Length: 317
Image (cartoon, rainbow, N blue to C red; front, side, top):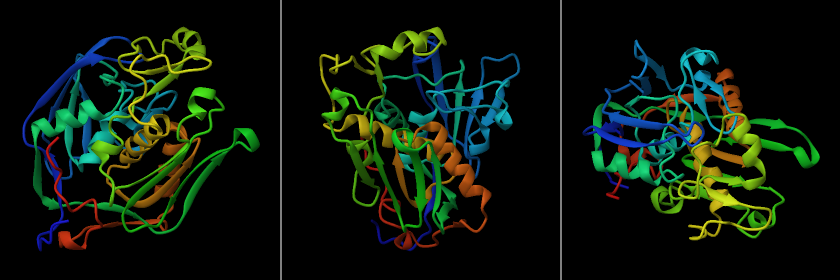
């Protein structure tokens, strides 16, 4: 952490960068152009393929679908123009401390690239990060907020607790031999860990038994072993194996970081999840923001006063 008397500022990109790929669910080719944005603009997706381009600002109440991915639409209208599978790009923005960004996209789904956030991290860092002359605003959690669903074998929950920093823990429970043989619980602390090294390379995963059902619903059409960890009834099928011993649990943390960055500001909190997913993560954000006593908005006039993990500049890839 730098001992800098200047305030902790918002960040955007220095230059434009772009990527071309396929949507993991739609299977369609898509081009993404990432552009710098001014202070307090937030992260805004812009559907440039429509006759009149439509802007969709990232916001917990813009989330219109959470089946298999986080999808946003204007005002959360499920029948409106949408952008789906935003969580990996949002995770990379959170990991690098990017607050403001315009994302031009010529289809309704962010490209999956290699199935992790690493390609997005590389793209963003290649464009360079630019501090802006405005204080970085944080949502500081002041009391515990929790959402739960199911009970017994179907129980899942997600929780935010007060913490001076940002720490996440996630526990998975798939009851699958290949997944059970890997680490089931991961804790990642922005103060002591390195997002790019520890989390960003964890890929999304899918089970062969679910493929037929997904494709009948028009999902998973762009998935393959270049962008998904594929698991049959017993083992991982990818010839190169896993990138981390606990890659399944780490990908769930990667997703949670992305889902929570939809809050529009970085969190100062400890997040815990047990079998949580996009739907429950969004419910958690909405529950937090619905209770004005549960949080406040804070800035740091001196970088030195910010929690570790936020004040240090992002290093080169």
